Image (tube, rainbow, N blue to C red; front, side, top):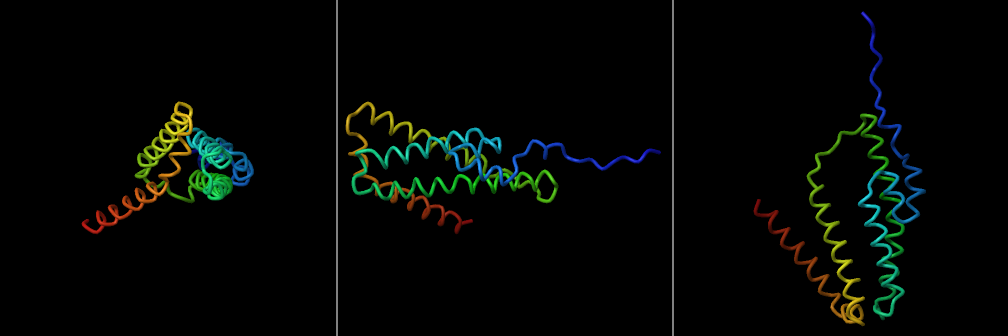
Length: 161
């Protein structure tokens, strides 16, 4: 009887190393491309571009420092996220980590779609209606109210269960 060699995964050959993903992540969207996440790469480029254009445009006024800080924070988030994704994929391919059930995958897709649709709508309206972004920035506290409301509602939903 022949002894069979233990099966090794060929998937690890196609994976981006965590260090490479981090380095490429310094270029907006490229770290996600290295990890094979094409939609996330597109979202990263669009979000980063939107933050830069808002921060440098005439619309934000006194909010310009906030959008500049958001753009800088997002710039440093991208390589860190690419590193952790590549590390997780490498550990899974080596059998050192189990694949978690994708319970949040539909939720992540929903949020990505909503963010991209919202950004596209804002940019479209700004092109269509002159000065729209300047007027829209007057209502930015409504976003905080909306996020806070969602958090409060989800807290009470968890308590009922």
